[in-house]
Length: 134
Image 1 (tube, helix red, strand yellow):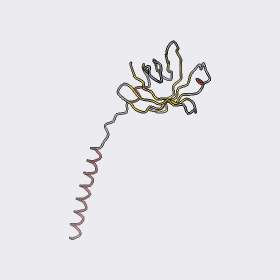
Image 2 (cartoon, helix red, strand yellow):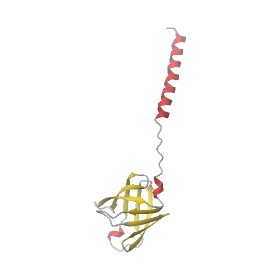
Image 3 (cartoon, helix red, strand yellow):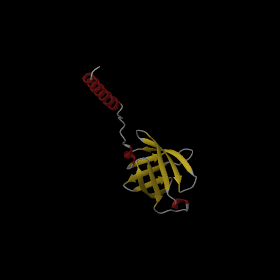
Image 4 (cartoon, rainbow, N blue to C red):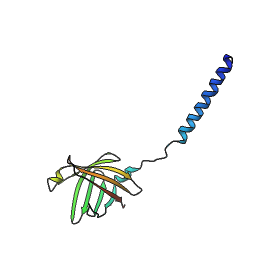
């Protein structure tokens, strides 16, 4: 094979490789749309269960209002990202309420998400599900 035909072969190989790589990249492009920020505001509910009493939650801006039983609490909420936030009671009634709650969102669904909550730096951890109702 002479020099010119080798260059043509390399050019042909380079073009084929580029087209194949681009095709694979485009075909594997993720269609996942991260719209988990839809949980940052609205009305939510945690249903009564083994670990929780029924709780209704209203979120707006940096405030969360929680109603459970005859109790209503106001908490500040700070989002680190779409999957992690911190809650802190504005007017804590007990020593336990003085510690921040760290919430990790584990799974996101259409109108709900599974979470794990940890209080302060304790080993206490609890899992649950929050449903968006409005």
